[in-house]
Length: 461
Image 1 (cartoon, rainbow, N blue to C red):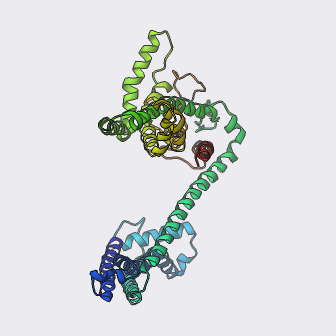
Image 2 (image 1 turned 180 degrees about the horizontal axis):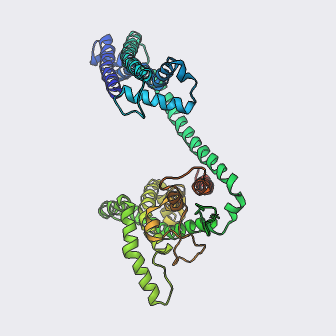
Image 3 (image 1 turned 90 degrees about the vertical axis):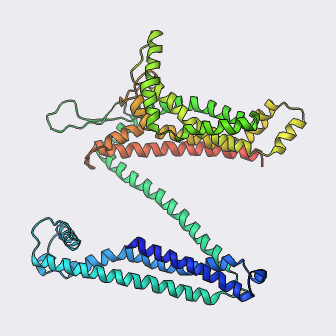
């Protein structure tokens, strides 16, 4: 029913748009005299459509939020006295039975006459509420159209009113984005604090062993759990460093070639082919790393007398770097192309070669965008999970040897939260502590990148 209400409101708004535009043109005598209006004709249509849609949708969403709460409270309040003394958990079960019975579903037990009567009443109230919702929405939509229609005149500045509403929507959207971010941070922070009440923070931050398995029985041996994060973050940084060592040179050099040296025909062919890499699912990269790159590295290493694990950080990092190349290349190409030609022409006019112009003029001018692309690639490298699981393994080894098996933070978070978990166990809560530290590390990287961007941007302003 909700989608039908929204569809009807949108249909009425489209009608209101046509009505508002037609009224504005009629006031000045048609399209040929539209210049006499204070705003362009379509702004009057948008203005009247907003008057139709906004009050109706506001009533609709408020109704959707409040209706279940009000109905449930009304039903619970009219239950017999024998139900009023039940605990909140038991009342929740009773209310769930009433809802299921009203919708024709299965109840937890034998429903007595009071529950059946409450279910019938709940069903009648829902029907009444739906009728009232339709009435309220259509009434407010009609009143909105009437009020907006009266305000339309030749001297009325509809564009200003429309832009004011759009500005409110933009502020609302940015506020929701900020509040969502803050909510995510606090949700992770609170769960991480629960973890640190069970495991000392110094053991987590300075510990050199990661083995989050907990004992099921009191007499169980070797399952006491160790929550030192250093091996996990070492593996994360090792794989990310290998990936960026592959992705940054390849991506940046390909961007320089495409933007500064490649003919237009070559650019039109090479760039789409390069960006196809960005569309390949990460699981395909994982297969490529596990079945092709990993065994190849092991054979080469064994031929050189090196000890190479079946799953290694090198294999995962190399394939991850190939995956990140399109992100850095595409973003860098866009920002290099956007550098004003005046800078290039001025450098060439002073006698610099094309290579010198690229190195000393174009790349420094495009540095903020390049840093942004590198940062985006770094975020992909830190957050990638599938390739690491398939090519690097799950072992939390404290090593900087790229030929050894390692694991990453995101892989451990997924491993800890797979299946039915108890959220009062250190094993489960450790995932939130890892997430919190990963958030802090990412924030530090962003601050460093912002500092670099601001420093070099000032030189060209």
